[in-house]
Length: 237
Image (cartoon, rainbow, N blue to C red):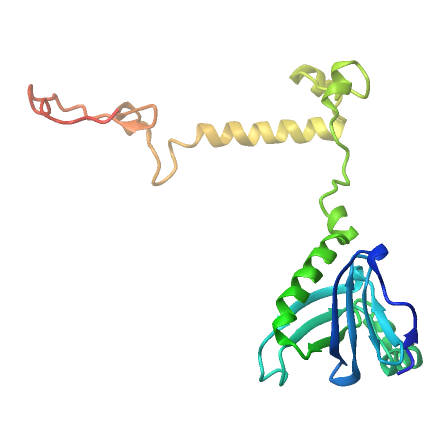
């Protein structure tokens, strides 16, 4: 495929963690041949016997896992999902660029399967991948915790540096209201006063005749209490 190229394999200088020979590389269901997989801290690389291969940058790798589901693929392997297109798909994407303008939010995806002849090496391959991937955190994840709004610097305000918020008393606040604001405030106060004065005359609510039987919103039993009636009661306070 056109994206295969020749390059020197990563070595100890690039933090080589795992070198797995006799490993087949499969891209989107198509075999690329058998070669050597190099899992280094800098990148993930695969080279065939002729020295042609490819490298994957860790920030483009969105998922990696050990697949043992023989229904999904006939052999156990290291599955790697990459947010990019390779080979013939990349050519098609250029030809269809105009048609894909409406799908800008959809990221391209490529599926790689690395199938070692020695399946017992899968755990070591997966562990090396995890360790190397952790060295390349997604910058978008780091920025997601940033607060875009203005922060209140307590220390700066204590030292008299920075703007101090302005607070008003009731009277000062009234003086800053516009004529429309004052009219609105007077209308709200009138509605509140009318609501309070009529609460005793509304159906289903306290009436004038029942006010005497309530104290602080609780009903008072005016019947004289018989001495000793509740002397043995256990009262929770």
